[in-house]
View 1 (cartoon, rainbow, N blue to C red):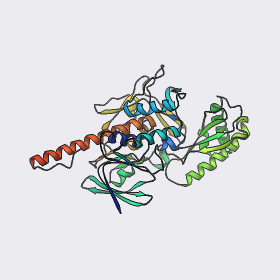
View 2 (cartoon, rainbow, N blue to C red):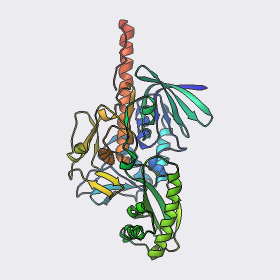
View 3 (spheres, rainbow, N blue to C red):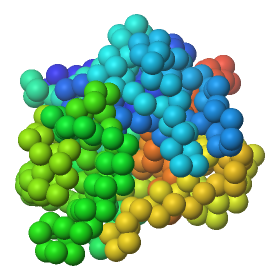
View 4 (tube, rainbow, N blue to C red):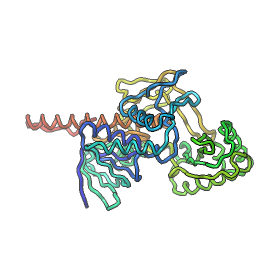
Length: 414
């Protein structure tokens, strides 16, 4: 088995994992980023998301800057540079940034390629974790050429489902299948005729009608539509049950075909339209979450609570996709924001493991706010910086041990 060593291993190359790896590598930490897909960006580059949520404060004035600075603001600036015509847009009570997934993928790839302390392994995933006492000492990574044994001093789980944390024996929570938020699947539709802004209202209305008539599967009553960049282009977001099961991808494609056929009958704009692209797979909004040193709650979000160790700001509402009633929104007080404390990123029971992205320590309702892409970027960066602090502190203890002859505690926390 081939072997490598690094100071920091980041599992998961979505926006959280990429930002975590970049933040650490820029501080001179030898970092290895492991991503299961063939490219970086995760859901943000594979899910046809079209808008980055969780970047901005709320209010009547279009925000000029993001709530969180540093890497988040840098990535947003690069997106503006690539596509200056894509400006901040208000949707209901919140602001979002339109973007093209290929632009984000290219930006993340270029940023990682510029860091000499960062190595990226794509089409790879952690398959085993070696523990010594309560610390991760090494991991086995499945790569296209076979298993790779990697020793590491620190790890960050950005897999979205706490995969690395679970393999390390950390306690995790998972909402029962029947209570989990709906998953999403987006399709690109082209060939629309005389499409107008009313399609965003007509599509959900007629989908609900189709479900009542028994023509469409029940969950398609929650279908949403938003226009594309061209007059003949639009995107439909379908809802499916969250949870496990590869058959969902086939179910999603079958539902998409049924939807398009139905819309072609009831809406003239869809007659002759076709599906020209889909998300890479059904994307869950909810998965396994670690138990951290603090668990963020719905009350924390809605009361705009601030924390002494708050590291990430977020004004995105609780956006809960409920299978019985559709999307429910609960808003942070207008013009305000809440903070996510660093303790939500620290994994109980594993001294040298942090987490970022969807699998941080939150309740299911709080997750419906923290999981959005803009917030995950900031969470990733803070996890990366936290890892740097931990590694530097441990190095300091080792130096003190060498000079004094005393032992080094294994219970150091990031």
